[in-house]
Image 1 (cartoon, one colour):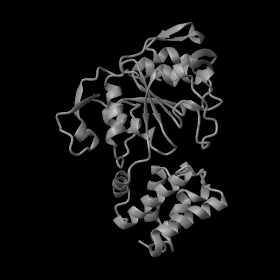
Image 2 (cartoon, rainbow, N blue to C red):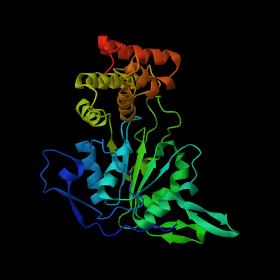
Image 3 (cartoon, rainbow, N blue to C red):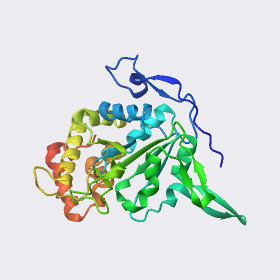
Image 4 (cartoon, helix red, strand yellow):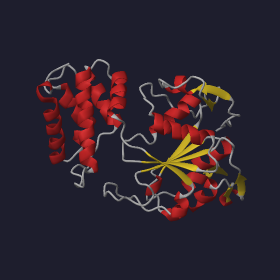
Length: 324
């Protein structure tokens, strides 16, 4: 497989136009690439950028200053979708990896592989991103046992990657290489009890990152997203859908010192799915209820399924059983 390296970032892009932001002077620019790359992420036309997290990500991409960038937040807050959608608008190619307790460093760096009787080294996502100038996204990095992340330390320090299993090959970081990590914690382990497998990351390891905390989108943002995804749904109904989503999240996280009462939550992705399926099933007896089950509650235990559906009924009131 032939992979093209990124070129010099010399394309001045208006932040306002590129990311659909109102009130931002068009003279404020960021840099990207003129041509789409084969590894540029797919575009989500309904994505709405949040100014604060967008600002932090663009500042990092422009001047990483030897850091990595760590997005921390609950499941479904959009930690991964943000860098993917920014990369799409900037034509910046991306490779990624997902962390787990079974994760092996070879998944990042690569390993020898036998092909047609010959031993060929298959590079991992991190090695390729360093070599060709991609953004590397390491999802759920806090699910990886800390001892297996030692190979990443030198990379985050800006040092070359040395691949001993490929004859000691040295890969120097391309000037356009960026390292973005996501996690459900701030590196100190899961203090909420919501995420199994989340461990404590070494303090020296976390010191190599800028850390950005990501919360669920504000109501106005999600209303804007739903308007793009399901304009057929009346605004009053979309408002109630967002209220349901926020109440489910509150019960998932636990509020005011009360323990979580739900083991599921509603991400923005699930909220959009609920809206879109409500339109698709608008001729059903109760499209809101049926679409909610397909989108979320069928994944829950019976008691929690009933609790979420009762919550939705109480918020919608008489509008719950009304077809669009």
